[in-house]
Amino acid sequence: MTCEQQLDRALAYFTDEDHKASYEILEGTGSVMFSAPHAVLQTRNGANKAAERYTGILCKLLNEDFHVPVIYKTRHLHDDANHDSISDYRNALCRYVNNNQIQYVIDLHQLNPDREMDICIGTGYGKNIEGHENLIDFIRESFQPLGLKQITVDEPFAAGNPNTVCATVASSCDVPAIQIEINTKLLMQGTDEYCFPDILKSLHHLTDSSGSSHLS
Image (cartoon, rainbow, N blue to C red; front, side, top):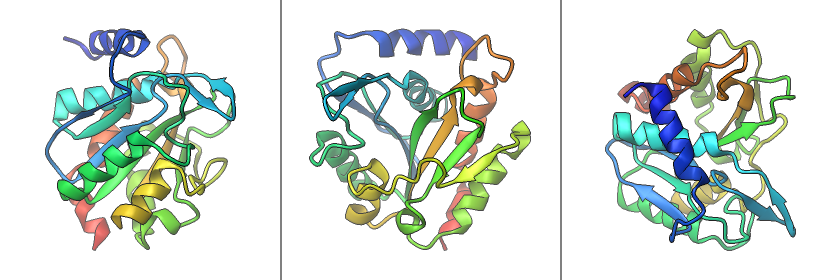
């Protein structure tokens, strides 16, 4: 099955509104875990916000192709797992992190295609990465083969709110947690900038054993 065929199948999965569970955890190997709390529609302050389905697809393919542990939202319960003060999603993620020796978490989001930047790395202004500033360089290097021109840090999104996935993991599990926002034009078929398969490879590179050296 080609990457595009996998993508189409996964897209159908995240557009299915009949999932019984609010989220799904797929177990895997390795010390890095990926998260997609906005893979389906979410509600924040009474307003619905569009699903970032490609983040869920990336998580699903990271697990299918590389057996990376992942968690993603599957059903809209008028909640926002990256904003609400109480979240079953974040609680489940923290349990998995604590019980499976996860060394760091990467929380995926999508940028509006009108944004100038290609990638935004959110660190909570450094607070969520536990002093491991070299992780920022490791992420930049992972995307370098794609020739992306604009990779920002904490601008426009820092994941600084204490109820974000990253802030919760960093404070509750005492491991670094990094938010990676990816411009949707890089993920959506039919755009000039489309490079979904390469984005998937870059994210997988972040799970390589070499990444552990950035936590020392």
